[in-house]
Length: 105
Image 1 (cartoon, rainbow, N blue to C red):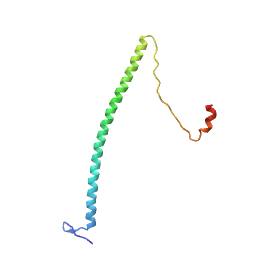
Image 2: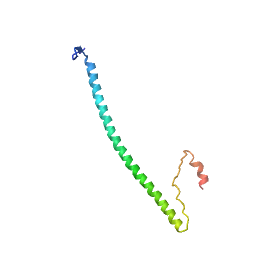
Image 3: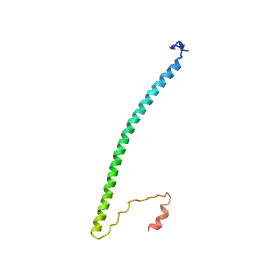
Image 4: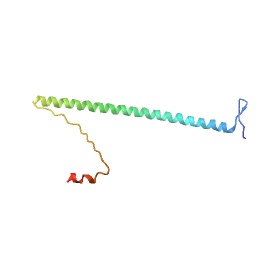
């Protein structure tokens, strides 16, 4: 057994010293990883807020454009139909492709 280092007059085994050194290395790596993640999250947060500002600006412009078009058509004594949302749901059911051939004809 290799008991060489002494700590305050107490003999400490080599395996304990290795374990302490390994724990220090892991702790440093963990702190470095946390710092990198903190910096990355801060950058992402800035990017998200800038995108949100852009989206809010687009929505405001769109609302103003709708109001402008409504006023224009009202001035011309017409009526304005708001555009419908462009939303499409597509569902694929596996195994039923051949059973719908009679409906397609």
